[in-house]
Length: 262
Image 1 (cartoon, rainbow, N blue to C red):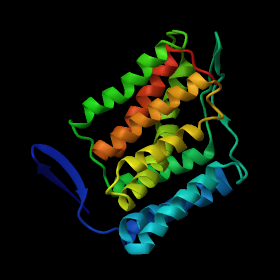
Image 2: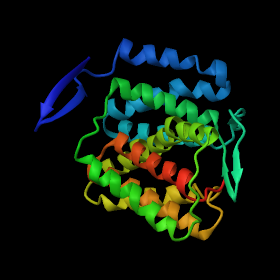
Image 3: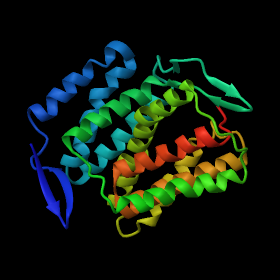
Image 4: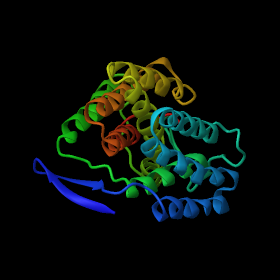
């Protein structure tokens, strides 16, 4: 199913066959099992999977509709409308000096993240050396600016380490899957002559959907700055994993170096 090619000295893994037959239905059947631990939330996993497949295999208006439906499915799952999406706390939180770090996750984001990871195994997205400098900029800029406004609090405990791991494998993958792989990629295909428009739209939406977490105007501005960095990284490099790792890099340094509101 996969081929390893070398393009300009950079190894690139790419799928050389369409997603059909077992490659389509076996993962969908496997994802049905998520309904066992996650209930009604897990039921949406195979549907989101089919939406991701349709985004890359459909044509014309069907392709556009698949982006819209997949985005709406992700929003509905994470909105709290579906029962069983309360935080699952795995360890006592870190609560000190105004920082609140919870080693927890929401089932909805876990389901979306697992579905995306499975999809990326079928449609691998390469991370290239050229991505690294832009990733570093996207990580460092909001942290440096944040250091001028947030209290410097270097810290690392078992709870923080677990929270950081969950942030990578659940939060960052799920959020970048929605904002970059579905929303910004879809808008970019329809507005390819004006790539800045999807970047601005997605950055504004990213900031707005974090208003419940960002408790102050300063923190919300930093969220917007970080979101702009991820959006620009996608616009310039189109790398899903680069955006995921940049997102995690910002969150990790925020957790371990600066005051972190719960």
